[in-house]
Length: 289
Image 1 (cartoon, rainbow, N blue to C red):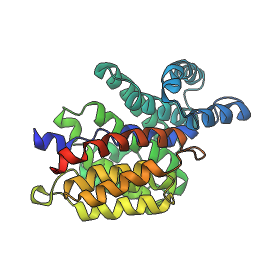
Image 2 (cartoon, helix red, strand yellow):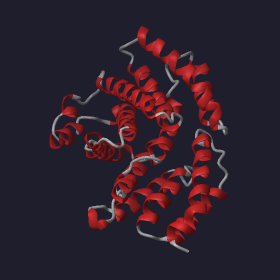
Image 3 (cartoon, helix red, strand yellow):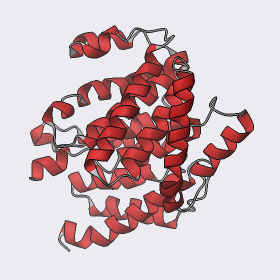
Image 4 (cartoon, rainbow, N blue to C red):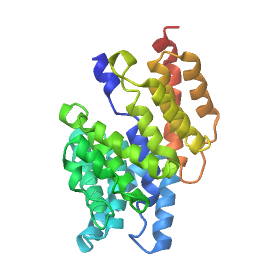
């Protein structure tokens, strides 16, 4: 059970998806309206409002795809919103899996339409997969990131399936490619994913906590500390793994002391503060005070 809990990819990926919602409306509706809706979602300080309102927008996006099945920006936008909704707001496991699968397929279609790279390697061996990633350039970055995030969300919703978890090395390779192309993309969230993936296990079981720490620190620096979930996951994943209560509590207090209101990060930050409060309250029990 301990190993399963350490290996679990839950709790990061849901919140990470909130960062990509700003693109979920772009190119779908008249520009002004789409921008207004996307920013309204990201800047909402009441997560329950988003939970209640998102399904109607998802249905609308599905309708647009029916009419424009080859529009890769529309596919990417829809994948982003489906992935975020499935992993953040859906509690029913079967439903979350259906929605996450749809998100991954939309994101894959978006990546494979008109890309400078090739999707042929995505289903091949790990070595062939990594080689194929070299064909993707900066113009592919939004589609590469959406596919990586949607795939991670799919793994999260299939967390008890060891075959799904076997995809994690490929997701890690995707995130590493994103770092090479532009590590600052989406507030450095690729570093955040890599921090989590490298802190799943202690060193004795093959984990790489010091690499994880470096990725978490890079993520915080690239967002200039505005993206509060980076500090929450640094505390949850690294500080707890190496049993550093001082670092753990300091990071969480910094999150609770920070202003969550920041353009396109407000919703994510509000949820991050809720997580920080819970983790800090649990600190004495976890560290055995």
